[in-house]
Length: 504
Image (cartoon, rainbow, N blue to C red; front, side, top):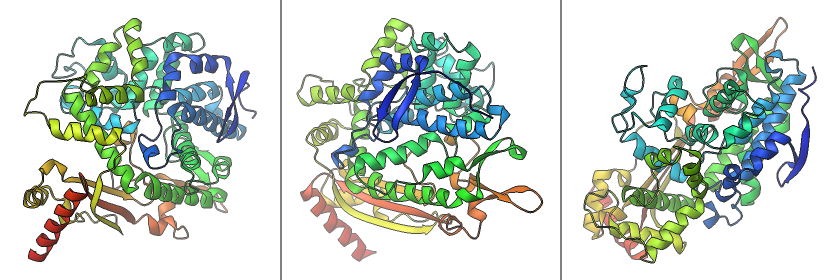
């Protein structure tokens, strides 16, 4: 079967994939201010502070995801999977729009806004139809109700602020909807939103949300190229040409036997890129500072919370404020705070103290990293939960900060605990809210299609004793770190740690 025939209007050159073809409708979306906003949102937060080439943005990435998604769907259509017939343009559009609701600095800011929203909204009030949506004054908020209703079936975490759910709001409550409605009907637009959020039941959603999806493929290749390392490179085309829809398992994406080694390489590439680049010690230190700064300014109402964001989408005119919600928004605010142009009344109830907040802002603006006091890295059995070193325990931390003669808020800890073959700092909303758990990570779901003499059958990659993933899947990477303010604080803490260890 030939792929769906669609008319392309222009080519856009991409430094990762070469020429990317776009249709007239896609071109209108790309030219819209809401998509152009993605030019000003860095793909990797503050990683360019350590790897200067990492200045690529969500705009580039979104084009790349659409390009890869199209390669996947056309490959599957050529294999005569009728269920995808007529879905090429829909899947391309979902891929193009999948990040249009992203926060400044990508996942750094998102994690803070998510935490703030979750702390104030009762998840138990949104699970059953007819119950109140929340415990705040949001019962009459059209945007929050829309958020509740659209994703009700994927809602146990109550994670309203996830960027995938914000994407649905941007699509439906801005002129993006007016562009889409010219060629898609209302139900199709809802399908696009559900595909993006991982709530779409058909195989269309697997191309955007699965263990082997266009999103992951693009960010590995793009992040590797931009940071100048080769760790994330893998044979994407070999995986795509061997993807199949396995009908006995509800059209699940599986990989033919010929693509198994390429999948193993892909999983290993993900591990090496994250462990070498994304989890680099200075990178994590800058991330910790940015999160604390956003949290501190958000609680002082100087930066947007989820509740501020849904308020601006009440009409098209108000929604234009969202166009300024990008990396520049964050940096402009902290620059004004640093120069004294933004002030607030002190309050001891703030979780982030004034002194810490101002110090961290200065460090971010001057690109001054936190000092690493202690680090412990291990590859260990993934079922081992008792792995925290003493310097990560909060009670001990407070005690050590006091004995070292420093403020307790300068005892800053970081813990990374991830499966070797499911490595990554962030999980999408759909992954967090489904029925999977840390005991059922993504790599377990990757299945290889075996050709036997009698029939086709699938086997989990992790259960294949001839696969390296069978060994690596049993282990996890554990990275524990302790950071502090500067060299003098590091010296004080180092002495206190040594004294503590002698007494143990």
